[in-house]
Image 1 (cartoon, helix red, strand yellow):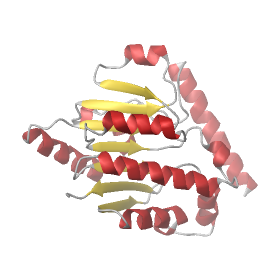
Image 2 (cartoon, one colour):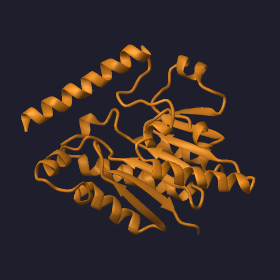
Image 3 (tube, one colour):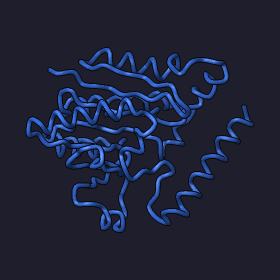
Length: 229
């Protein structure tokens, strides 16, 4: 087990150093610039989202994307605007961002910050939300308040679902490198049977949504669709 953790930490450090070399400033260990970078390994999801965007445009509706804990923009997927909710973006990031990318500085665990963001986007009715809250959550791994952390993230997810467009999608990766997943991997469990997979499925079951799960390296990964209401 110690050896696995050591290898994972080495990989993490290598990624961080690579991004520091390439960007020089204002990076996340898992930072991305374009939203398709989240989805490029899942072409069936990319195609499904693209067709949905085309449907909205055919009805003369704007397509809004929201990135939670990230700073990507989704114009290449067909979005007209991207709102990015993350910790403070640097002046350089803002200066070089395209005009259709809007930043909101905030902490996902701060209720005031997140409520203010929801008020900002609720009338926009986002069609796509990317939600990969990994960076900055390492301290919550294996901590006594881990279940509280999960609960807050699911509460944020519920708030996002309420304001998004009917038929819209939420892409979500696991909320952080949970040590439980390492143990379950070592036990030979399928990613479809991971504890977090079951938690998310149960959560979605209580809402008017459907969920797809893909098992892949670094996964599992999820695509939630809000059904037409």
